[in-house]
Amino acid sequence: MRYRIAAASRRARSAAGALCAAVAVVALAAPTTAAPAAPPRGAATCPTTLSVVAHQDDDILFINPDLQGDIRSGRCIVAMFLTAGDAGRPTAYWRGREAGAMAAYATMAGRPNRWVSKPVTLAGHPVTRVTLVGRRISLLFLRLPDGHGYANHDWETIAQLWKGSIPAVHSIDSGVAYSRDGLVDTVGDAMRVWRPDVVRTLDYTVGYGPGDHGDHQSAAYVTYAAHQAYATAHRLYAYRGYRVSDQPENLSLAAARAKMGVFLAYAQHDATVCKTPRACRKRAYWGWFYRRYRTADPPSADALPPPPAVTTALPRAS
Image (tube, rainbow, N blue to C red; front, side, top):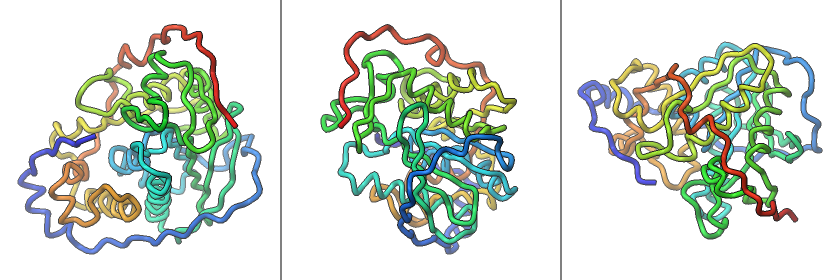
């Protein structure tokens, strides 16, 4: 999707020199593979934050600096990415985005970029999980089709699934099928497994429409539905996506610099994004570095009603 570039503010221009300081980027070490591990059922061993987003850079762009604050305070972290972020591109592209997410989280944790693969099963669905060596930080990748629908994935999207236009959406690597309820249950099972007392997601208070990405809203609606069935005491936070560009800057220079450093660690593995402060100044990312907006508005109507019943079969899986 083409991003709408927000006009640079005076403060952004005056801070350009400071933000162009060198940012340390952690080199990616491919995760080692361990035998499949059972989910860590039982009480959380430390206060836990679960973030649920659509794409591998949504959390570092729109939820930070809150996630980085959670990591620095020693909280356990579980980050769930619903789509592969593939944009219809080949496997190497979306695997690069996953590598970028790992590099970003290692940077936030101040740890070497070393991960161990520990697959889990959530609500009957096998899910890719990697865990950072030396820290209780896990990333979960569902690898559902990304974006606006692509022919190589039968035009499936999680927005269509949420609206009830299709009966199932399939992971792009293994063809595992998720119904709408199955996807909500998968996010809900992550809540029951890790027992977060803080859940962070994107903005479920706005409806589908221009100005944001349908995947962002769908991930937020799914998370909101799962949160409603999650019995453990917790706080739910919703964060605005692309629409933050319309708001005044509300982060300090130090916070913006830290946010940008995390993004640049991610960016080294994503072929489509800016990779230097100078390049990012010409893109919408620059405005996002200076902004983070939570909303306490009630959920959008799009987040609430069940979709129309779909009777076609739930195929695929090899």
